[in-house]
Amino acid sequence: MTIKADDKVFFSRCIEDNMDALYGVALRLTRRQADAEDLVAEAVTKAWISIGTLEDKGSFRPWVFRILRNCYISDYRKKSIRPTEAIYDELADGSEDGDVCSMLMNEADEFLTWWSNPEKEFFANILGDQIMAAIDELPDSFRVTILLINVEGLTYDEAAEALGIPKGTVRSRMKRGRTLLQKSLWRHAQDAGLKTCHNSK
Amino acid sequence: MNDDKKHTTHDDIGCLEAIETLYAYLDGELDDDISIDQVEKHMEHCKSCYSRKDVERALSEHIRKANRKETPAALQNRLRNLMTDF
Image (cartoon, rainbow over all chains, first blue to last red; front, top):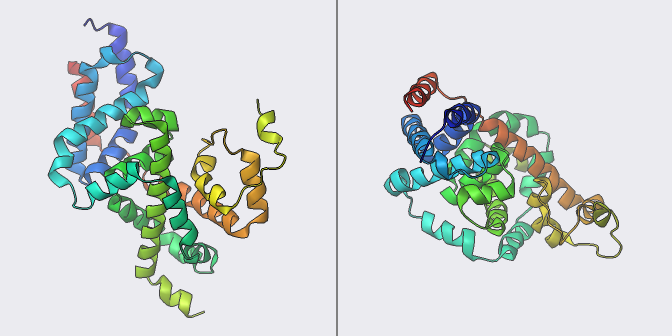
């Protein structure tokens, strides 16, 4: 493969533009700064080696995120996989969407009530940390999908390309991941004292 | 093409369908099975689903803010050195 000077300029500019995004996703995947930095460096190196496989320069973002994810899977995930991971992965891709919606429908409306209650401001102040903790609790497949779409702004098509999955699975993971996130946040809010406030009214 | 999404006639959707499509709706990724108009019409009349949309939209914003990270200077330098050597 011949690498042109233009490729290097293009590549460097794209990495500069996406550096924070790559690091942000890597950090949420590995949960450790040192590991995240190594992961990004490895992904950038592999991306450069593979630059000839990038057919459409407009697809750089999903392409480089896919390389980052593959590096994570091959080098990091197997070291830190959690016991529930496999179960959640099955849930992510194998169940019917209706199951999730039923879960939401049947869920008590406490979260919605919380959102509109007078203590909202107080909880909003601590919500940032809770969101981080709740996202960290999510299985990889949900966490990465939510990060790519809600944080990095990828479209469902781009996320599907980055994750190597069908668009329908992206859609499904968003529903399931966000549902789990909401439930987790509700638990964190209760731990932070919400129940006391809520019950005392 | 947007006319298809504006001319909803009879297919009012229920809470289950509204929730099924909520995230795609908020992400601007609604497919053609259910229209934007149908979702919004349902939200107008359903306080619970409207609240859920409000929660999820705000939550999306919190997720975005909470996860915005700046690359540490050491990594910036490392990557730039790497790319110089390419």
